[in-house]
Image (cartoon, rainbow, N blue to C red; front, top):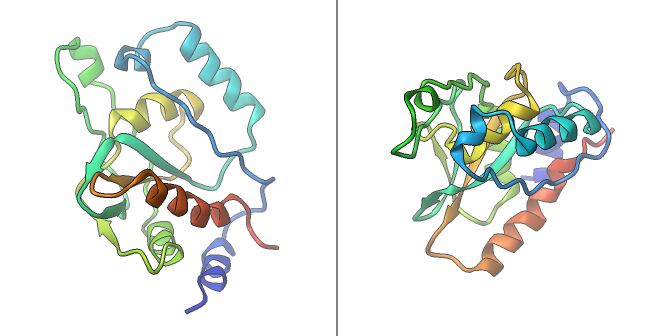
Length: 171
């Protein structure tokens, strides 16, 4: 199987975009999801400088697993993986679609690493509390890739190198 050809096949339905940046965005306090402050303003201003992506692959420090997993459901649930905050924060929903097709292609792109397609996790607050300010319409599909707590930093760096093929669509 040629993973770049597979990636080209699935991305054929995507519109062409500029080369997309890889972003590291820390969410800070989960309260940033519902407050108006300099961090939220920064996320919104950043979004104005970015081309609209076809999808987002988020790697959140809140999803540690034994083994590497990628969310593969049509509609990931909004996970409120925190405690001790006001009810208003627990009431937030971020109804972005997932992308089972992109999850499958991500799995194939990472071969020979074994990647499990996950139908249970969803979007944790490390993802939705930031992405909701970048794309408040929830109109960009989002998948998450887990961090394998049994593996080294080098392992994750090598995964990131393989994932760089997702940054552009071959024309």
